[in-house]
Image (cartoon, rainbow, N blue to C red; front, side, top):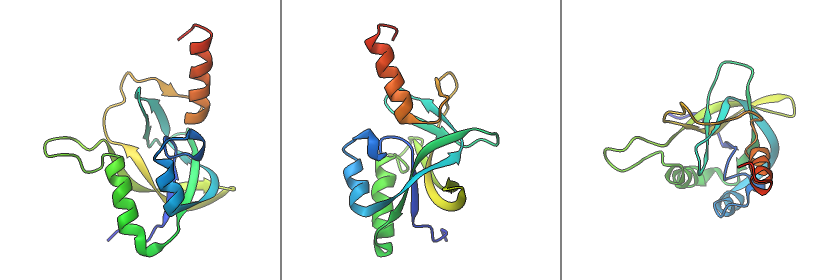
Length: 148
């Protein structure tokens, strides 16, 4: 049985500052607790970021959310599982996997769900800052100045 965790850590298109249409779903079923971080590394997969867990001093910057209604947990998370490609068509490998993770918020630890990337990141550019929003802004500045 899954642990009773009603919090979700997001780091990519589900961030409030990313302004992705999927954020409308998050804001309807979850309440933003605040900025947080988890131990891991981010990679640029082109159209989306990939988070992978690591056992070193590397951090992913994101946001922690709390599910508004615990009775809606299964439905709310199944919608996110679908969005994140957790249960692909037959013969395909899941794009992400949902797992509990230790989240640091306001210098305290708590448990939340995260979507870890479930495929290979070899050769993909690392997002060294650990922040998708900062990385996106840096990439946009580079492309405007003609470097990218």
